[in-house]
Length: 351
Image (cartoon, rainbow, N blue to C red; front, side, top):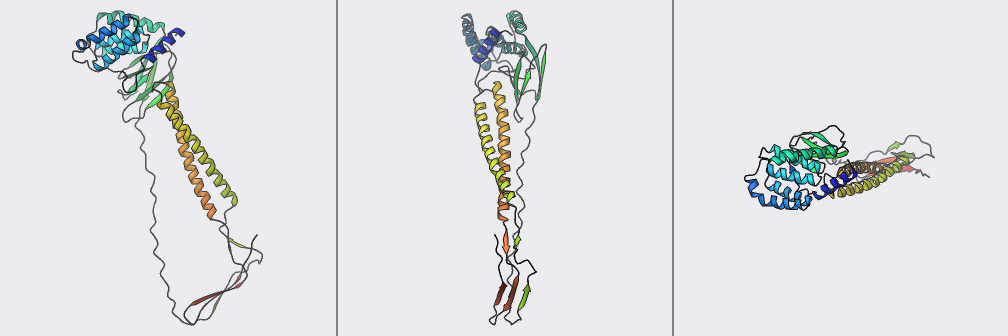
């Protein structure tokens, strides 16, 4: 395809870039009643614009007419306007649509326009591309056009992006390279995977409060409890967690939350950038993939940070606990019915 042809095609696509809610969708719907009669005045206006070589304006006017009053004859006029504006993909779609409606088509449509369109497609080296989309009524966006239930589209021999979407299905966008003599694009849309709520966890029942033990007032001999022999210069330590574990878990938590913040911001920025583009824009798919990747990283690093923080808190609470050195503990009951505890020995110190 020549440089001049690419420029003309790009300008034509820009001229017909409808918003997402009012764009023309090429689909073989039934003809509207009295469509040719009711749309006669608009066809005349479009013909006047075409004679003044305002082909893009004529096509825009005919697009609105085709959406409001679909008919084979309107498709023929639209195909001719697209052909004159060098929007060849749309021109062929409109011409194909004129035959699928099973309405009456003028001879100039099936003869002269058909011939000129075929010659223009060959000269620009457009490739007939078969569409194998499941479900069949999915909305397909490719080559700057939106279509549904159309089985063939003519595209330039170059890399292109195609998007398919349908209610209740996960939208897919793929990048393919169209090459002569023909191409085929297959997409199968799938239902979204179910999202399961996280386990609520099992809550253990509360243990009943300890029952009070009554000790009747009575005299009893002192009882001596000897602690096991131990080195006088050593400490007795219980439940100590190595310092290295605490430092490592804290470092993982900090790095995870930093990574979550960075990837979260990148996901937000990619989403904002995608929302500013049409789905047919090649950059839309790239930004959407960028958003999905960063969003997954943000969630994963956040979860890792929470887990690492929990591990750090656990190790932090498991510090060294020091108990007394060996000594003698005595337990006795006084004359008033109370219990007395005495300790004989020394407490160990530590560095």
